[in-house]
Length: 331
Image (cartoon, one colour):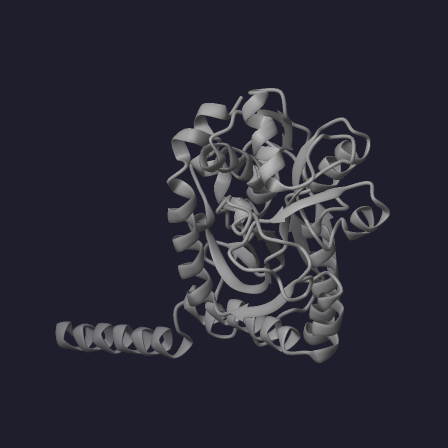
């Protein structure tokens, strides 16, 4: 009897093990097939900025083509505030299922450097870079007594603390402002006037005096004479608008380029990330999209998740060298 019970127990355990092996782990089985039906519903794209800026413009244009590739609508949600941290946190708190994604640029790393939050892009799963923007220019309005970089630097040195630089605390413009002060050896009045759209309004209304902006975003203001371009913050002139001199050739070596990316909550299944990233690559290679992007002087560029992560890490190290300067001016 004991031998019978022993054999019965062994057979039961063996059958149970075979059943579990055949079925697979309840956690791993869905992951293996995660991308099979993805996406099966609309995708929410979180922008940590308000409407009207270059992030908003680039997100809406690129997402329109992504909808065609993935066959589902992309709902653009502007969630501004906190130097981008409110929107980023919204993505971090979302389910890691590929239906809530972040669209942003390198500014995502500044709040951590500024001491506003304790996380950066390492808290997300990078999906890919889709766009490079080498169009950051310094601009002023025609009422100021300088029209180029040498005149600007000379005036700022003669009037320390008087020239108002419009920026957003803890954001990309904040970094531009403090590096500008450091490299030029000047003292500016860094004033938080808001993100890109707000900066544009402030400069046009002469509520601030100098800003950094994306050339394509404010091109109409340069053409109308409402804005004066001081220089492109790059080593070399942009071939898409070669008449604009760089700050470097005018004696002020600055280089501020943006990379735009998609990211998902940490732990999103790799098959979903790979499927979304592959769609990004197809959009970047689409001649129709390339033609539309050229209107804003930006460069469609695809980097896969691994290369995007490396770029983010390298960029963070570059930004981090200014941590003390940024934290000293964060108010």
